[in-house]
Length: 329
Image (cartoon, rainbow, N blue to C red; front, side, top):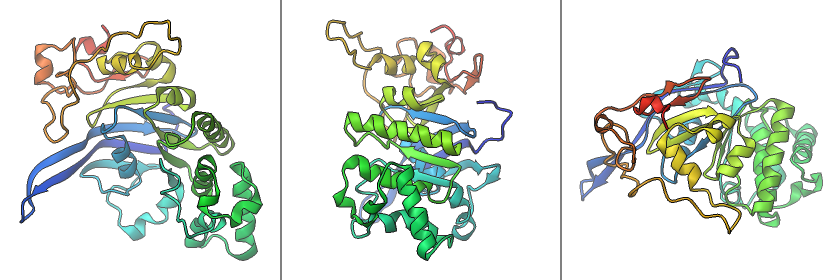
């Protein structure tokens, strides 16, 4: 995607810390550094994949972007407008341009509402349709996601897992958003259904020029749908690049380890030895300097004290690594 286009989403130095409290008086005894200075841009019609281990802060980034949790610091802009500190009333019209699809489709649907009412609710809340027009628009949304209009009367428990996620996608499309945040939307589905939902998202993106922030831990899924990929470790982005460049030539030691951890499909092939040592440090007490230095086999002495910034090492490939700026790996 060309940087000449105005970004749909811009995130700059995003920070989200959670207090840790203990005792009868609930005194603050620590801080969880869930997201610790994340920056990226997302352009029209682009999918940015956000990957990393469980607990690295991916979902917190998603919820912060949507203002479902309040960021501690940083800036979030939609179409150039800063929404970081907007109140509920001012934020309401902005929500029409950004929607989210959650990981568990059953938990994100009201079990007491019919599917048609769930998909039509955003249109009612924003006063965009009612009566016969509302029913017609909801039926069209059902058809767009591969569901029959007669299924509008069904309750969530009457759908399969893949169909429920299609209902969630239809609800997200209802307000014609420009940005959809997909927070692990296929991880709760069977592998065969995952492919169907991913292909549906790609088709909808081409039709409506949607921008996706696609969060996942499955690298195969990310490789299929993404244009660019950002790799997170312990609340920070350590590498971001075009998909082909990142998978072909990863520059950060953690990215290399992440790609090497993918199981090989041929049982006769020998799985490579792990490229990292030890366990992920606690986000309550993250390491100084480079967050990955405690597990990195290439760490330099200054990695313990200097926090590397994302640097462009060519062709828009950015990496946060002090070892030759990531170019020597």
